[in-house]
Length: 83
Image 1 (cartoon, rainbow, N blue to C red):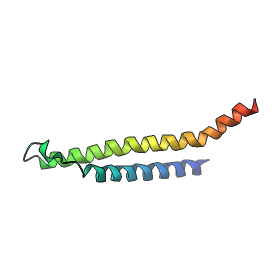
Image 2: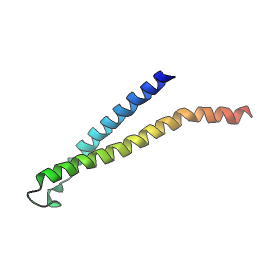
Image 3: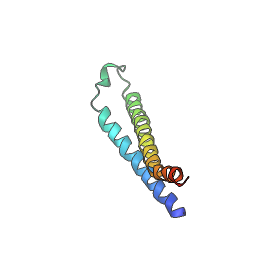
Image 4: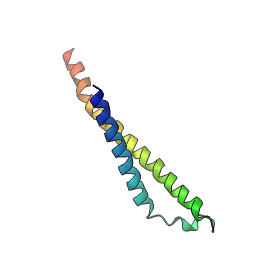
């Protein structure tokens, strides 16, 4: 049972890192320089990192929830058809 938690943790960490990297890559398509004030390069980079984390984590949580629900669906169907 504990090894299942280890696998789930590894899948969750990997999923979050992949989707954060994907969000980082996708945000590169936005020309955000016109929206930010001049001489605030460090603040712009921090905002860029934070946006990548927020978007990537949100998408990863959706993906992990969907994965969990799809694994639980056969159990619900078994309960319905047993009765």
